[in-house]
Image (cartoon, rainbow, N blue to C red; front, side, top):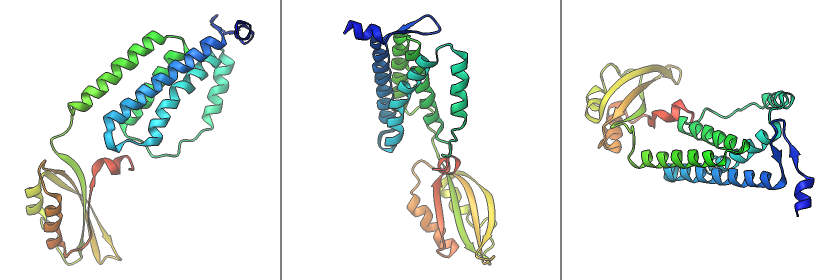
Length: 231
């Protein structure tokens, strides 16, 4: 076994000797870091986590570890890697800022494993995972109101100036009309409001009262974050 390990050993440009044992050790620790980070993501997102993203969080530290170990301080390899990655185009819509933060979390954990700083990496992962769980439990920075977008379709003969203000004041803490556009060849208007719903507001009653004013035409109430991040 020792002969096998010695036969696949190599020395990096930084003077660090890589053997089969050290490589496997780094990959296993990177996988553990990825699993811990992924489980933290699942725990802090409860029932709205994405399976594909959780699996990706498990993979990234291992991938980064391999890249760092292979590249080392070799400038030619680093430029070759940059050229390879430059042809990759990410076509997905921008993600939630917290999800992007988890990706950088994974990258840092992978870098720690790649350079052999396992102890510091473990400390970093443990502290940040604990921190994420704590702020999730205490609902840190959670707003008292819920920001939403409200779209109301009205007939062209209805004067929309102030027609819904009474209802909006009843169910929201503040609101503003952000956009007005015509639809159906000008026979209908679509009003878009930015609203902050009151904490205990009944959304069904809110929509029912709006329907009585707009002639039972389309009404859409959606989370503002869904439109910002394309969800």
